[in-house]
Amino acid sequence: MKKTVLSLLSAAFAVSAIASCSTDDDNVIANPNTYVLVHGAWQAPYVWDAVKSDLTNKGNKVVVVELPGHGADKTPTYQLTLDVYRDKVIEAISKTDGKVILVGHSMGGMVVTSVAEKIPQKISRLVYIGAFVPASGQSLGELSMADPNSKLGPQLTQSDDKLTLDVKRDQLTYLFINDGSQAAKDQVLANYRAEPAIPFGNAITLTSAGFGSVEKVYIKTLQDIVITPGFQDKMIAGAGIKKVLQVNTSHSPFLSQPRAVSGLLLQIGQEISVKP
Image 1 (cartoon, one colour):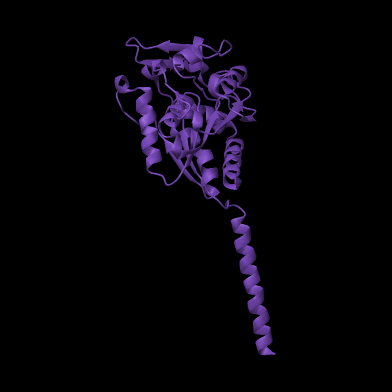
Image 2: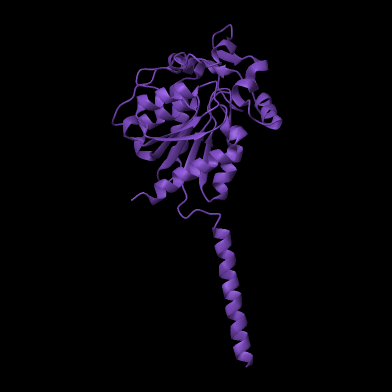
């Protein structure tokens, strides 16, 4: 009888332990991915903090790239080009195993496009979030001027040496995160730096074997007044992007609705995992 009771208790403990493990595992995806996140102009790695936390909590690896001349990086402005940005991202990807999901926001769309042209074999998905998608031969400056409804252009001022571009401070949060909390707006103001200007004039060359061979996803930002939804549609069509998702936010969804962004990125990752 004693042995029977002990056996029953042992079995109950084992079932309880298995159930406990199962509950914990519900929060971790079966096939984790590596995400490489690239910020846009006038921003820095901090913008991805909440999204990174969500992705890593699900068991994924996340690499956030600090573009030269942004955040805490002190590279002289006159040394910065689109190729310098590209090479920084390629360096980060070279330290990862297997393929990555490469994500770019705004100006970062130019950067990730350039990266995809150089190392298409390392990218499982190229994801644009409210980002510029250039055609071959276009520069960021040329592309941005093609959006007639953008509110950004009139709010820019150029430095006397032509090396940086500033956004008028009283318009900064209105443009980039009008739908965000006051805390998020304060974060944008506190981390603001003038944007290096030279990369805006650097044209990009793309090929079907490079950029054209990478599967792409575009996440539209529906309240965006920096890169308007209508212009996003034009770039999506021009690049032949078939997979289009959306968030009902301003230009900085990772700050105003980070869970929505991480949810979409997880969805993209899961689709890769189950693809035959």
